[in-house]
Length: 162
Length: 421
Image 1 (cartoon, rainbow over the protein chains, first blue to last red):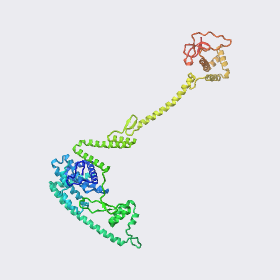
Image 2 (cartoon, chains in turn yellow, orange):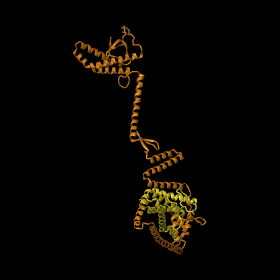
Image 3 (spheres, each protein chain N blue to C red):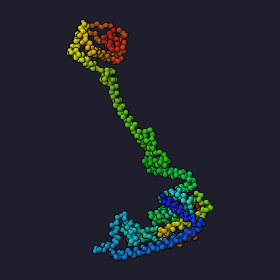
């Protein structure tokens, strides 16, 4: 799924996105970034307090809010698109934290992994709390959190933040 | 407080918890996994309970419908649930709520039937499949096939959101990397808004749109749209001007003065025309002097003298002559009487003299040559001296001490009367 900062999925098994998926990706990512930009000062203050927890809390909440709004508008978000948007958002936040001096260059890989893992865990926790998680997803969710599945985590480590 | 303020507060609370937990990220992940497992177990139990409750409601509704029947009845029995009647009686703004109510009480099939009655696209809850991380609804078409609603295609709205998102990220980076340039970034964004306004205005070609775009740009640049120039307030963006309150007052004063000057001008113009027409000055008053005016003065003076002498108007000269002779002869009473009426006599004689002089001036205006009245029968005219000046057109032009050529011959003007030479 190509976008200006490069591929979010650098896995050799990655499939090209359809036009609809790309459009939805651009739309969702663009709106997430708009929200981040409008609340720039809050983002900076939260990241300074705790770079990891701040990124997880604000990023997950922002994305879940926009996904929920999209669903209410009759346009549910493709799960693949959601994952890739999340990956790109984590990269964006890591870039901001790195530029702010909150995360050093040699700390970036660990930071990316931590934020991605905790973001997914937080997202799944919120879904489970809202009763949106089916029993079939529990196992997959655990695998995702553990990072045992070569998925976006591997992509994340390969495609580091700019 | 914005949502992000609350979130920041929540993150701060989490900091306290995190501070007592292991600092190692692996420990954090372990704690997260344990928490997730616990939460999922609770969520599973909750979902199971909800499904059980829903199944119970379904059974109850079926029993309820069976018990109540499907038609309105009498004799104490309550009416059953009649979907068609509900559809007819429900106003459009409440149809959506009714569909959901029916879905809860009568199930998906009844809700979909009601949706079709209302002309709405029925929906059904799809069972989450492997890979779904979020629950979402799917549409059901006429053939009963379900499918995910197609997301928005790459339209203009998508590209706009992309661009705005890029700008948002740039704003965040600017604030991080160079807070001092944050204002410059904001100015750049403002410049973009202003340029877009002008671009749209150029596209429409309407003069009003261009003016509005100008107003927008002036506001973004922090320029004053209105300027005071003298007594006027000028709108530099939309054009036009209006007077300040002081300007209005001045304009009112000027209008009033102009009206007065106009009236005075008309009056003076009429007077100037009159003077130019008649060619002489005035003896007083607004009207130029005429022979009739002089005669009236003579008559008025004569009448007053007649009253004092107690004689008739045409006996005034004789009465005055008689008094003069008797006073010269030593008659004291006549002298005293003459002294009493002397002011009236002086006024009468003065009016006579003025009329005679006026007549002489008029006669001089009519002819260019010095006036020479024909000699009276039996009278011999004395030879006229060559140094005598011609009479001027106006009495005011007479110079005291000068000799003028009068109808009686050369006479010296003493400032009051002519003296024969």
